[in-house]
Structures are given as structure tokens and as C-alpha cells.
Length: 495
Image (cartoon, rainbow, N blue to C red; front, side, top):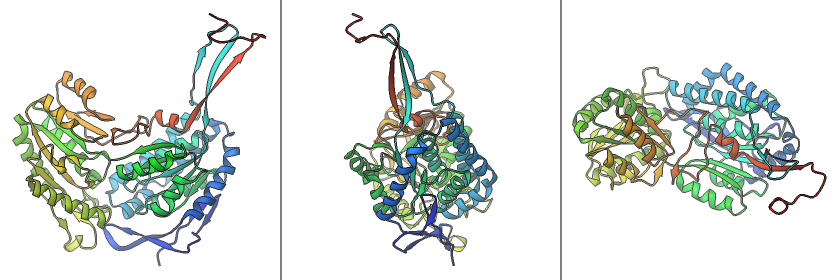
């Protein structure tokens, strides 16, 4: 019998009132049940919000450096358990161990960064326009944050959201993805062990319609942070906006790597293999478009086909595997449908394009790394997010066309260009419509101390990571201190 896990509400581990459970299965071996998780609903959200609102009254008064000390404990515990956390993540999500270790490490980095921000929650002082008066501002906590996280980075992204929110003095309610609840469960167990007061950290398992909607619509929730599809993000924005909640949305991507005629082609090949097929293409920053200068198009395409053909697909726990499974049957169906769309549109399938379901693959959701060439900018294959191991290759005549083709997309998360021309590199950094641009590096590889997010339909302008996320989870309070001993009227008495 698989182990049953519980919600964490007001410092206690509790089942859902429904008495029902959902199965968490291994996408590489679907017959393996990793765990059973409670099917929660509005009752559990109501209880968690009530606990968080009570806890907020005291938590907001804890000095930020003291809160930072707890973040340090979280990071230390994650360091101790890194290998076990990575192994369980691979079992429930599928990506190879090198990547799940990296996922955990990003959580560790975020924890240690949050610990230092406890002594760096800087605000502003400014000269007053009047004599004997001081102008100050302070960062203040906001309240209760509802954090809705995706399945592809089940440790890093919950850490991105929860640690800054907590450091700023907010209380949180985490709703993990139903495909990957175990990793977030382990994170909350670490929070509990680190010593967070009851009610400050809450975990509610369940589906988006039952738990996610209840969290978004609850009047006691002040902040919503969501990572997922643009379609769901728009719905959340509309619902949360009705009560003027602060909302951060990190949504879809259709990221492109540009390879110019002067590029180091071996380096560019390493970049596109990692960007397109790392995490089996299941990253919001994955390289799903490859834009290649005509002078090197044929040569680079040949190099790409040969390299992709050699990628080893398999169980992420197998050290020989380069590419793990797709997360579930729904994602397999999506990838299959886009392969058929690409064929129908006239793109040329040169590698892969099929599910792997024989022999050692028969128990899981495996798909061959896939490459289409002769893809044009108006094709759906070029324009729409797939979230799987499918790469589209497009030929351009020069740098200007590369920029134009790159920007012909509703998304704008990550971008990349390979060139030895410093002038092109800086023009690309300026002109590529994306929240992130890499020069001579893949479209994936964000670092926790830098702002992360995109433009256009990739989000609503807020950023995760770096110093920017601390501004999202806090609000400024301006304070004027007048020691003149008499009434002073700004804009009046001094003019």
C-alpha cells in the first residue's frame, strides 16, 4: 500500500475532509504509485486562510533578520537531504537526476539568498523639500499569499515563491501541482522542522478547480502567485482582479535560439541540445525554436540531426539517460498532436516524431526527441507552446530577419543568440522581445539572484527571483518626520 501524505494546516498534518485521495505515479513506470495525496477543497482552504491570518499578526512583527535565520535553516536542511529530494523528484516528475539535483540546488540557493535579504530589505530615504523634516520609506508585509506552483520544477519554483514571501513577513498557503505533490510535501516538512510558527506555512493538496479556485477567490488572501499556462493565468488574473489582489503570473513561452553565420557551431549545438531537450522540453524557457542563418543552415542542421539521434531516452534514475519521460499521458497526447500539425503544415520531420512504447519504454510516457526543419514563422509549430521534446528549425537570411522572426510571437520569456560579433550581441540584447536574453548560451539556466520573467503573454510584468521578487511580496510605506515644531505645508510654504 502506498504511503498516504497529509495537508499541513496551522502546524498540524491533516487529511482532507472529503476522505478521498489522489495517486501520484512515476511517469517512467506508471504502475509505481509514489504516494497518495488528499483531495482537498474549499473547506481546507478556508481553514488554512483562517490560520494564516491569525499567524500574520505576530509573524509580521518578527524582525526580518530573524526571519532570515529560518531561511538559512531551510537551506541547511535541503543541503543535507539533497540526494534524497532529487531522487524522489525524479520518481514523481521524470527528469534525469542531474537536473533534479539542480532543481534542489536552486531551492538551496534561493534559501540562502533569502537569508541574506533579511538584512538587506532596503528602502529609500530622500531629502525633504522643507527644513527640519525627514522623508523615509519602509517595506511592509502584505498579508496572506496563495502560491500555485507547476509540476516541472517542483522544488525550485515553490522556493522561488515561498521564501521571499515569508522573508517579507507574509504567511503562505502552498498549492502544489497534482502531478508532483511529493517534492513540495518534503519542502513543507523542512519548513516545519526549521521552526516556522504554526499558521505561517500551510500546504493544501488538490486540483486546480477545487483548491486553486478557492484560493484565488478567497477574500482573506491578499496575494496570488501562479506559474503555469497563459490560458489559466488569464482566468486567475480576472478572478483575483475582482478583489484587487496583488497577482504575479509567470506563464507560457516559445523561446528561440538564434545561430548567426559567425557563431561557434559546436558551442551553439551544445546550447540547443540542452535548451530543447533538457527536462524533456518541459520548461517554460525551453528552446522550441531554432533560428539559423542561411550561410550555416545546412551544416548546422546536419550536426543537429546527428546529435539528437544519439540522445539516450530513459528512466531519469538511470545515469545513462539524457532525456527522461514526458510527465503524463496528456502531455504525450499534446506532443503527438503537434507532430501531426507540423506534418500537415509542410514542415519536414527529420528526427523522432514518435512515442517510445516498446520494451523498457512500455511502462512509461517516453517520446523520441523530435526535430522539424523548413519551419516558417506562420506555422503553428513555430508559434504555439508545446511543452515537450519538439524543436522547430527556421532559416533566415541575415541578422535583421532573425530579430524580426524571433519577435513574431505572442510570448517573450527567454531568448538566445550565438555570435562572435559584439555589436550584434548588444543589438540582440536590446531588440529581442524577451524578459531574458543569453549571449552564447542556451535559453535555459536562470540564476536565483537575478529577476526572472517575460514580456507579452508570458506574464503580467512581475518578476520572480532576484531583488525584484521582494518588491512584489512587500509594499512601501512612506513616513514623514517633521521636527520643525510648527506647521509646514509642502508645496505651499516653501514657494
